[in-house]
Length: 162
Image (cartoon, rainbow, N blue to C red; front, side):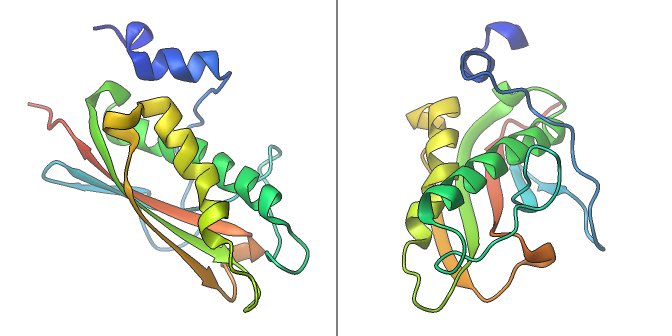
């Protein structure tokens, strides 16, 4: 099946999503590591369309809906990195296994799980329920690099290339 005719790419196109290239790491790590049939994608921080960090603290100066939008933007970045990890073919993704989300939030904020839905729902929409449904953790943290409001990492099962 050609890339353009694969359902994942059809869904991305219908949503008007163009996947970005892999971001250059901001510290001493690599964007992803594959071991066996698992790909571990390093945490991606929320970025605004202009590429600057999406700064904010949930429960102080950022609301849940804005956090969800930030988490959705991270899902797009994660899919771009995952596409690079699988040699440009998201059709090789067998399962989104796990998403871990860190939400820059006040001690009183308790909607980290709702913020993270911005990422989880888009992954489910793009990959479909059989591949996109995943295990998940969502944590509130005191701070995230560069002041970003959300950081998310992902683990995916992929078809191992020959």
